[in-house]
Amino acid sequence: MKTDTLFYRLFQRSPNIFFDLIGQPTSDASSYEFRSVEIKQTAFRIDGVLLPVRGSNHPVYFSEVQFQKDLQLYHRFFAELFLYLSQHPTTYDWQGILIYPNRSLEPDEVRLHQVLLDSPKVRRIYLNELGEAANLPLSLGLVKLVIEPETTAPEQARQLIERSRQEDVFGISSQEIMDLIETIIVYKFTSLNWKEIRSMLGLDLIKQSRAYQEAVAEGRQEGRQEGRQEGQREFVENLLKARFGSLDEDLASIVGALIVLLPAESAPLLLHLSREELLARFRQS
Image 1 (tube, helix red, strand yellow):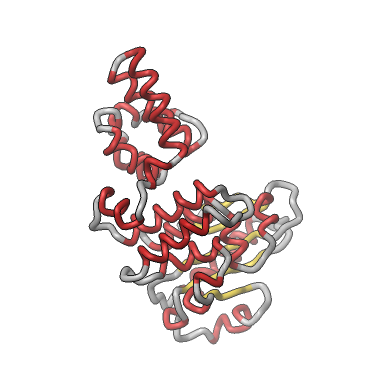
Image 2: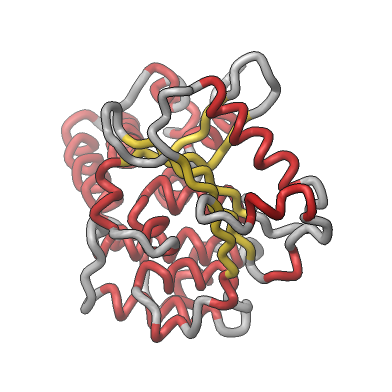
């Protein structure tokens, strides 16, 4: 998984994190949905857009997460942004948010876009300048965990888990925070298996997941009533519903491929792969 994809997944699951990062009231998050948008009649697709709900007098936020140096970044970012505005002339207002791990990854030549970069319409955020995680709101501690070195990330993750039991984050449950922490750690330590990751964090996060527990409980009940295979089907379907809200035709099409896996094998995939990743991996052509 690319780093920008990880950030967009965090923002999609909890727009509150985005608003904490840019210093705006998290109460605004309920007025937004985070998604990608296509620019009509072009090859452009903007992945990180927070759109206000229809009829809201709020700005559209265009976000870009950049963890590799790209000399064409500002050319592309502003081209996509203004193409979107030209196709949506009734947009109330806009803000551009560029997120870097540090200043060194900014393009070297910014002359053509300097007036935009200096305007209040555009903000550049450098994650390494946010401060120590212990002194940040819990939501920003999650963001800092993404750039935490592997040597200190496990301890930082354990501290965030402990904080999640004691601190409230507007709009995010303690269980959701734990799920986000697990997602980040899985991303950072791709060579470790699930047992090693759970041991690293000091607890079995997957089995503590409310969605996992509900799916297991319902799957076991159905398994006793209708047999092992049907119970596994219910397990997979319940977990898909818990992740994505409903079981549409596309998701239903991959259930058959997933039920051949053991619950211990399918649960991590169902909890952490995106909808697109699941469909690409398990949908049969």
